[in-house]
Amino acid sequence: MNLRQGGGRVPVPGRGETPWLLVPMPDREAFDALYPRHTPDQRDRLHSIMIMRLGGAMLEECGRAHGITRERVRQIEAKFQRLLAGHLSKLS
Image (cartoon, rainbow, N blue to C red):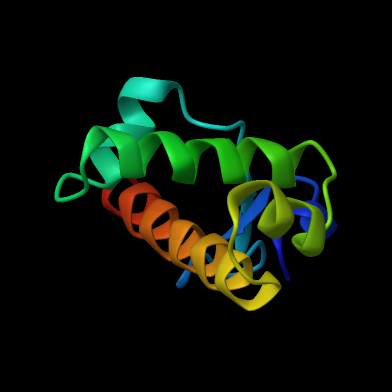
């Protein structure tokens, strides 16, 4: 499931009956903390892609806007979900 289809739901392993959480987009500071090794420009691009996807943009639209393929957008989204799920599971 991607963020657009899931309406903001993020899968979190080991949650029993509800294997996902409905979460808002993290604020920019929290988003940047998920990507500590990326440059500010890279984080800006990733943040823009995720905002577009959560806003309902298709993979192709996001890719066209950022000069990347639909598959790369899908990979970026999948990694964001994994990073966010890992962060959320540490909080539980």
